[in-house]
Amino acid sequence: MNTEKKLLTPLITGTLELRNRVVMAPMNRRRALDGIPAPSAPVYFGQRAGAGLIITDNTAVAPNGIGYMGTPGIYNEAQIEGWKRVANEVHARGGRIFMQLVHAGRIGHYLNNEGQMPLIAPSAVTAEGLIRTAGDMHLPNSEPIAATGADVRRLIDEHIQGAVNAIEAGFDGVEIHGAHGFLPEQFLHPHTNRRTDAYGGSIAARSRFLLEIVEGTAAAIGKERTGIRLSPFVKLNDLPDYAEEAETQRYIVDALQEMGILYIHLSDQGPVGHGKIPGTYIRDLRRRYNGLVMLAGGYTAETAEAALQAGLADLIAFGKPYIANPDLTERFRFDLPLATGDPETYYQGGDEGYTDYPVYGHTFGANTTADCR
Ligand SMILES: Cc1cc2nc3c(=O)[nH]c(=O)nc-3n(C[C@H](O)[C@H](O)[C@H](O)COP(=O)(O)O)c2cc1C
Image 1 (cartoon, helix red, strand yellow):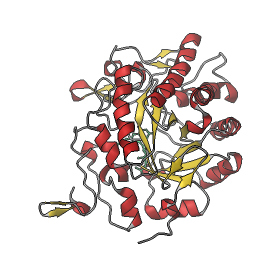
Image 2 (cartoon, rainbow, N blue to C red):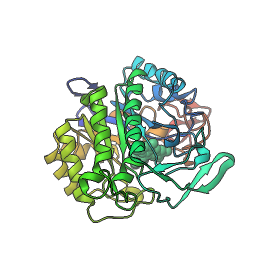
Image 3 (cartoon, helix red, strand yellow):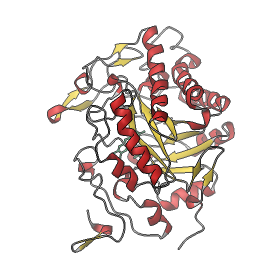
């Protein structure tokens, strides 16, 4: 048994006790119906409650914020009730759980949201790329409408209300999705934000939307329950490079430091070829920001431990490893081999590929878990 791993040591803040530093990264498994988490979502998350912290699927704060078909929501009573079952199950098993709040903005298809409402974005700039819709069709992202000043206020309030709803559902906190080219990042980026009002133009103006969401959320539910995911230098969802990116991200980090929120979660996509966050950037962020730093993107037990030991982070989030290894922390603890998930069921398949990955050592007929998929 390896008891020396920092990864497996508790992390205790003023309000939160995490039993280890292993985080289950947000993964939209796209199994919700009408935005209500799948009936087996409590089982799925309960199986993974050994993580120090679970972050849910990205969860939409408004009907036209869902982006991908099957994305859960947190904007009505039925959805809050569905999520209560998840939070209860995780807590009953001693785990902690945050909800990732998303508005996908210009990413999505209007057919994928209940009211078939138009997509909305900082400016009417349609995203390149296809999106899956009912009947397994793949259609180009819909053209978004440009948010009016009143829309911008409503979009900010929808995020804040989503956070309030998550707390009502029993969650320990929320993570604002400020990454991966969704709405807050669409405001940050000059390619998608061509506004000339207070929310477009300068770095301060482009950052305003995201920062007002965070500020409002922290005021509504507490800064110690508020985290954010950012993906500087990552190119996802049709966002090209831009000259002021480092400066913009530093501006945001300084503002988040002022606000004193719980954590910044950096999503690196280097291992999958969508952009790497330089180590120098992370070290600089560590100097500017005193809250917790979480890193994600291609980590193994070894590289996670090295990042913690080097002082780059306080927490490490694991995505794909959590799909097929519900007992990931125990596998790390005892240096057990990891199972590999089936990409065919990442985003579909009902309970298959969702709740049916066994813990280590469970036997199915002739197969053992290490190679059962
Ligand atoms: C099936 C799947 C769904 C994902 N959904 C989300 C999501 O909802 N929100 C998010 O911020 N990242 C999402 N991601 C990215 C992961 O959080 C993580 O950053 C990424 O998988 C890299 O970490 P890994 O190498 O440990 O898998 C998703 C990844 C996968 C594989």
